[in-house]
Each structure stands twice: as structure tokens, then as C-alpha cells.
Length: 365
Image (cartoon, rainbow, N blue to C red; front, side):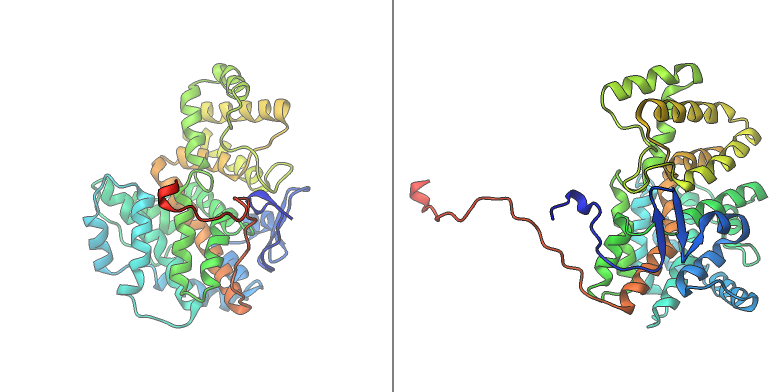
């Protein structure tokens, strides 16, 4: 069977997440993400993904404390961030920093302990990069705030409950999504029995390309191009006529609306109203209606996450790094699962080149 881009090819067995593309459902360890968003926390969702069960109260408290304890980063890492040219993109700087973390931290052979360190430190690193690039003083992590609250606090120096809740929801919805490009890359590296940090670095590197993780940037750029609701239909119709893709729409697996987009949409409208960005949301709703009517294509998770970031006045350069923060624990979960029942991932390629030919000597060419 030859499937371009490995579409519909089963490469690994996994217990972590399940996508029902027909019904538009996403489950983590059998639990609907809708329930996790409304009833759980990001820390609890990570525990569920890694350990396969919802934690008891004391288990969650212990796990949350472990995450909090590992938030600070070594001064030499901060120095490295300060010394990197500010012209470099945030995701490029992040890609260069992650592989250096084991150089300045005590090495622990327990992959879960390594995972705790990575998941805890990534928000601190992203916030520090942002602050340095914008010539602002770095804000140290706050030990008494939740994971999402602490990230917004380190980024902006303060946080509002609605912002923290929006970011936490975004993190939960980005936590895992089966075998996407970055996760498959991370598992492939892990299958060589390389260390967890190297496997995660592989996953991060996939996000430099525009086809995975970067659509939220393009969504906001598109809305800025449209400018006002009245120009929306003409703009989108022209793009479709020219056979151009509309960012934030369509998904390889979902045949209906991405359930994550539906959840984020309700948060996006609330934030837009609070921050006087209703015009942005109105344009998005109109685009969604046009795409549904003309192409029967629905929004994916990037479509409304872009609006949330914009309403919070988060720089567009941070959109992909925020994806990294949300997905980091998912990558760790997949690497742990790969280690548990490892087999080297080594697919074959269908050869489509010349048949066997004779070597032509130099003087006869």
C-alpha cells in the first residue's frame, strides 16, 4: 500500500489519545477533552496522560509541587538567552536552548523526572525569551500560581482570571493529538533509545515548517489583511477562486468541526468582547460561514486559538512557542510510551527511480 504522507497508515499502538474524525471527538486516556476543560486542570490532565488514570487529591498535590519546584532555570541558560541576537525568532531561540538544558541540570536517569523538568521549565524559557527580545526585565516563576497562571504572569507581569483560564484551556486542548508530525518525529528519535531531551528537541524542530503548528500566525495575518467584516466575503471568495488555502481550516483526520475549535470559539468571543476586539471575531465567524457553505470545510484548533492570543496582546512570534508549551507533556507521554515497548521505527520507501542501469565511463558521457 502506497499512501502519500503516510495518510491512514498505522505506525504505532498508543493508549494516550483517540480521535474520532467522523464524530469530531478527542479523548485522552478515554476521557473527553470537553470534560477535562470544564472539570479539570492542565496539571491533572498531564498526570492523566502520563500515568493513565486521574490522580487522587494527594497524588495531584505531590505532582503539582514537583512541577512547581522545577520551574526555575539555571543562570547560565538565562545568560545564553540574553546573549542570543534579538533578531532571531522566538521559536529559533527556543530550538537552540532546549538541547542545552541537560548541560546545566543534574542528570536523572528516570525519564518521568526528566519530563517533569522539561514541562516545568519550558514556560519559563519562553517567557524569558520574550522579555529579553522586548528589552524587559525577566520575571522569575511564581511558586504559588498554577501552571497557566504562572506563564501569563511571567509573560506580562500580571494575569487576569479570564486570561489564565483561556491559556489553560488552550494548553489542555493542545496536550496531545495522536500521531501528528511532531509527535511522530519525537517517537522516531526515541525509538533509537536516544534520551528524552533529544527526542523532544526533534519534535520542536518540526514546528519550524509552516505546515504544522504555525497556522495560528497565518490566521491573524489573514484577518489583518481583511481589515473589516464587509470585505470578508470578497477576500475569501477570491482566495478560493485562486485555489489558495485558507489558514485555520481543514484537518487530515477530522471530517467535521475540530472539537477543540468549538471549545476555543466560546472563549474567543468572551475575550474579544472584554478587550474590544469584537470586529476580529465577527470577521472569523463570517469566514467560517463562507467556508462551510462553499467548501464544507470546518475550523481547526489554530483558528480560534489565534483570536485568544491576539485578544491577550500576545506577540505573534509567541504563537508557535505557546503550542510547544501545550504539546510538550504530550511529546513526553509518547516518548515514555515508546520506551515501554520499544521497536526501532524504520519504514520502507517505495522506489520510483530508474531501473538498473549500466555505469557509463567518463569519456563516453
